[in-house]
Image 1 (tube, rainbow, N blue to C red):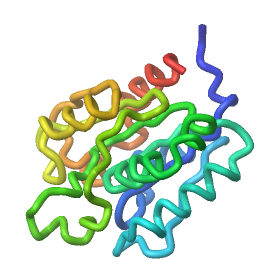
Image 2 (cartoon, helix red, strand yellow):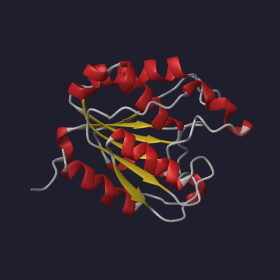
Image 3 (cartoon, one colour):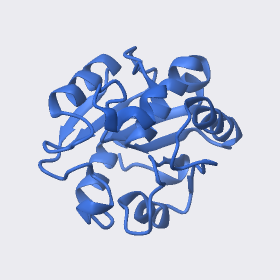
Length: 188
């Protein structure tokens, strides 16, 4: 049976510095009329309480069940929010597309700006999810992304060498990602 994209609200959850016009998340916002970008007050210095609080308000306000489309520290935002609000997540989230989940627990000093999102929750998610990872992502090793997927009860997709799967990858609308999203929606 074909997926009815109009039966969900798509909530795009960008990572640090938002998703500029060339980012695949921005292209997807243009492709789905029932999509919204989660706006954060401070894109450069993510703060877990502020970011998860905005996500909480957006999910509660959505008129339909939401499909979360998260990237980078946006994935940590989704997982931390889900751990804090499991009942709301169970009833209002239809599924989550989790691309390039930044390893907020990495001890390297370059991760200090997102360290407040740690430790990364490792409980099973109460909705269908897909973790999408790149083999050469500097923000998460492929094996760690796979470990996250297993802990969360999510499917896992290795998309090859796309770096952090962000603007630098120049993916445009990212047809492969859309196919993966369609597979996730088919499970809902």
